Amino acid sequence: MLELIGLLVGVLVGILVPWTIPSQYSLYVAAGLLAALDSALGGYCARLEKQFRLSVFLSGTIGNAAIAAFLTWLGQKLGIPLYLAAVVVFGTRMFQNFAKIRRELLTSKQKRDTINQLDIVSSHEEDQR
Image (cartoon, rainbow, N blue to C red; front, side, top):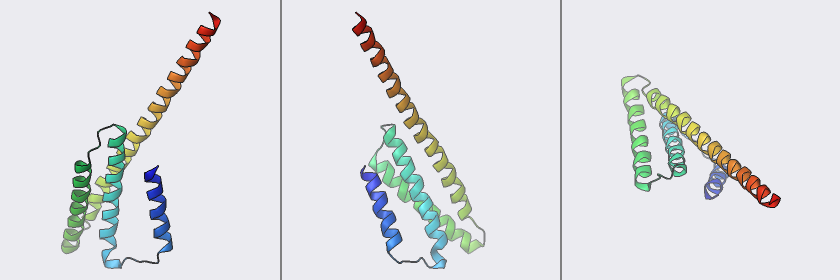
């Protein structure tokens, strides 16, 4: 629930505050946002699997952002769009993490449904006795 509130507050602030990003930094911001989204999905996935560790999450977020910024900077210096490497990697990992989250949520719901059905069957059998 806290995550949803934070997301809503962030979206509202983003909509209501008139702030623009200079075009010279747009690639850096885009790569940083992808790194942040990748880390957020990875953290949520780890939370669902009960393996979340804050130190791993923070080091991954900072490391991903640093690598994305470095690739973007190096690509601009060389005249090669190296930021696309970060886009491909983070995009792929985001889809993989989303798939894990979806599977985990669906299988946990199916387990709850199975347990509820077993409870109904066992209570029905007790009523017949």
